[in-house]
Length: 170
Length: 119
Image 1 (spheres, rainbow over the protein chains, first blue to last red):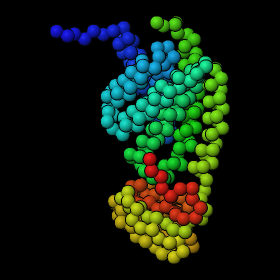
Image 2: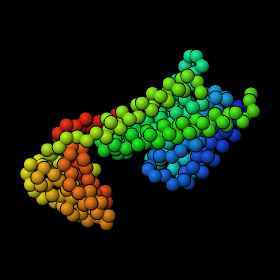
Image 3: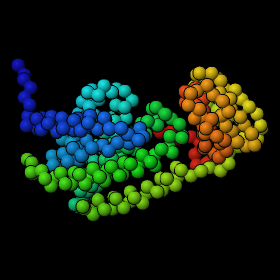
Image 4: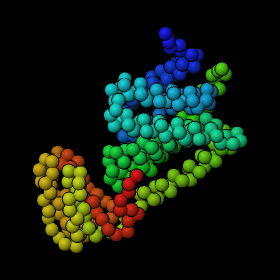
């Protein structure tokens, strides 16, 4: 008989995903000035995980966060979920490419900024393509991107100071 | 901060104003108005001809007035009346919408960056 054995990595992913889900849900209670604009603090966890445990773990944590977060908030398979999932997939893909940059590569700030912008771009693309295919929506893009850049940089600073205080894992 | 971080931040901050410049530029004066109802473009009218049109929407008739190269909502069966307060529209790309009644107007023609975009 086959049994499933949870590895050390499984526990790690579960803990980190739980942390990200908690932040995700806490953040969903915050009022937003514009649909699509939010700090994306859960991405702090994704970037910190990327830098400490690598891309594979970050993908698990990022995707589990979107899935579990939507199940708990009751938005699973709703437009909100589709937007959130497309953003998460895009930002993880971009991060997957960014880690291969030669030299010293990006630091937490660069990763966070890249993730925030690709998240917003994919989310916007999905919103435009699937829900509101009206050219007027494009007028929102500069504002949304500004917010993404701002939050991306702020989150990057948070990741940087977070990693300073975390003991080296593994 | 690595050098790649700095380069990324500088490039991003330089490109951001460009995004505003391309997507927020006002088109020239338009020459047509496109009327949308129930999420579909229903008709395109010239702004040269003064007229008043009744458009059947989800709640009832919205009345749109075209005069002197401009177009506006003059009445709509919604509660907010945001469409009416939007006033006259005359530049290409400008629009006014009555969301509850699902009727909107958009000015076409003139110098425009795009007329339709698909992904």
